[in-house]
Length: 471
Ligand code: SF4
Ligand code: SF4
Image (cartoon, rainbow, N blue to C red):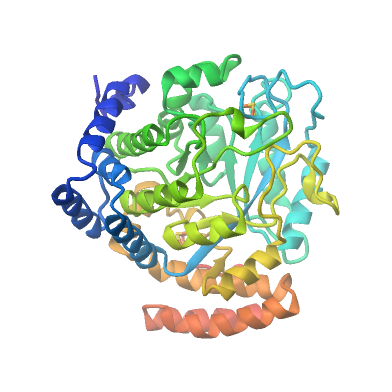
């Protein structure tokens, strides 16, 4: 039985409810009156239910789709301005005991090189990332209780935070590791991680079990209920995501929103972020072997609908996507992107991008400087801000600031100050010139005068060599 407040996976992600939702969406896909009502509700920027959003996903009336895109763009502007938060993944280890059929790190892949970074290697990777200008990382590791126990992850987090190379610092470490126990989540919280990210991969239980034939990840309930355990362990910023291409996208979309509704219903706070990866080519993985691949058009529609369905949730797109696709989805709602990424273990220390331990093919292979320049050319402000969790603005506190719009008084000045740091310490000459002009123009968009004056003062201090200001 469907119950968003239940703590049982099969009840808050009810298969029957998803099937009924898809049926309802199909029946109403041409119901213009209902579609108009749903779009009107979305305009209030308070979000949509999984049923409402599914009707819009099923709708293929061109004018209505255009209205959805325009609204997504508007909501994106209202909530996130022109800021795009930057991050990079850091692969710690590709040892893994699971049998995921879409990932080259699966246990049965005997020819991929297995690597695990020592703490000295972590330090080298972090220095390389700091020298690029990164301040925010998402660490990734396969599930392996012997090679990658929680103590190893915690040691890595501690090491990452401890490294201060030149003016560099990693100020926020997000974690993307396997579902674990409340006790381990508590340890991660104590280690001051940012967001705990766990992709569901697919919400379809039967497919999930087939796609994860072996290993602890086979357990659908344990995996799907992980965010509740993370919340119980004190982590209130959690990141959801599905791997589009494994199952029918309509099913995944409804499941994803039901998961968000569940978190809100039980914990009073929805997901901090939603990631939208699509299955990609990798070592022994052929994306064409999966039947449910989605084209760029559907992908854009999904991004736009996520934006209007959960306006307060950040949306992340990685370098899995090409420059062209990233450009489109940034406009429609994505608020956070990676740049200059290496998806192999130990990849940042190498001059040439190594591919022997890559988790997936990187489509956007530009350097961070090129990505920053590109964003600014399009009128966006690349932001290296990590302020919120360092100021204790997490979970429901963060969400209430978001919902009242007050967060804008922090995001804009923080974006400008962290961009200034980037320009001073890491940017190429050309990027710096473009960036300085952008900062001068964007200062005027700080809503409160008092905040703008403080920000101007901090920008001057950054010019004089002082770092790490934040609101
Ligand atoms: S997706 Fe994660 S759990 Fe599955 S094989 Fe890859 S690294 Fe292991
Ligand atoms: S102020 Fe908070 S919400 Fe805004 S960009 Fe920084 S960390 Fe994100």
